[in-house]
Image: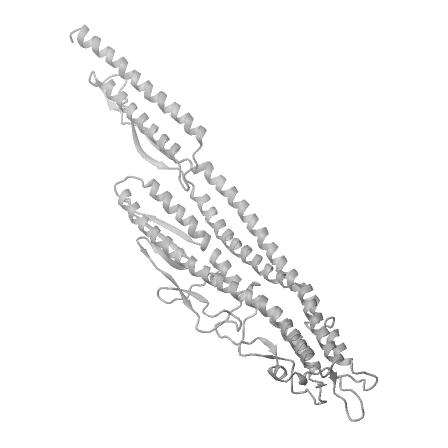
Length: 505
């Protein structure tokens, strides 16, 4: 049978267990507002019973705390990480689509109308005073301003492309930093857990880093546990390993030697692994901030640049697409104006068939023909006439057209179908509407994923979160347990006092 003082041993184990539970509860309360913290719970079990040679056979020996574990659900963690990737992509796109919209709105349709009207008025002034060189220079300046109006839009978009490119570099650096931190935590976790002690706080830190990493790029995580407590933790980006337990594989950015699109900013980055293997989240279909930024920077609406062997289709309307649309508008407008101008004659009656009004400079920008800047008298303001007096306006009508025909035809370009069977105004309105719709779509996605993030996080918190009311109840429960076991010791003390001092046993 157990010795006379066995009751003290049992009560002492109860005090120790209650004390541990009070400490765990206190730790939970202290970390109630700590980001990524998982509430912890002490697991206590009855100690092996002692066999005694009595009718009752065995007697309990008390209680012991076997472990302190965090409470977490991997299912919710996975769902949260998946949503983080989609949310990160939507955030990046929504912000930069708003910037594209602002760039286009800053140079709106009314602004184009004013610029075009100024151009036509300049020609009319030359018509009134054919020999007035200042009037001709003013008309040429209006023509220059007309093209510069939308060249500035492209310049702003190119500057935005450079900003997005810098963000891509920053996020690649952040991935490398997070990977290094995860690998370091893997080692610390193994050091602790190979002593059979759960590394709860370290695991919380690692899971928080995975949440941050998944917002940048979609990840796949796996963990293999061995009998001795050692684990092998792997993080993959698609099919490539980023973290292999204690080791990491670095990513880097490499400036492109050739532009994928003629209007791309110089030195845009491609992402590679340290081995030189390409890593493109957009091609791999990996959601996240990186994919969103690449689609904003390089998105061409699925129109591969045939002149670039490295160009590829990106089915998204990003900066490249909107620059190409403005190029399309400028090409059509310049061609329409040049076609009319090259059928005219200058102030001296010479044909301007070899003198387009607009040409491209070395940077690929439309400018007024330097020949006209050098000699404004070569600007055409009327159609050329044949010897029989008919006018070469490009139509079948060879009579009844006065010297105002060229000016009028220039004016009519404002309402003529010259860009994809649309007028200039219709085309620009369509472009502005297009970017507004795309921006609204990303705003809706960002809102939806943000709301879903709250829902999933609340679901996670029902499992891992610290409930202040629950912890308060636990404090009372374990305090009562502590008091009860203390009372058992007091009772046992009185018994032993009576037994020893009162009976002399």
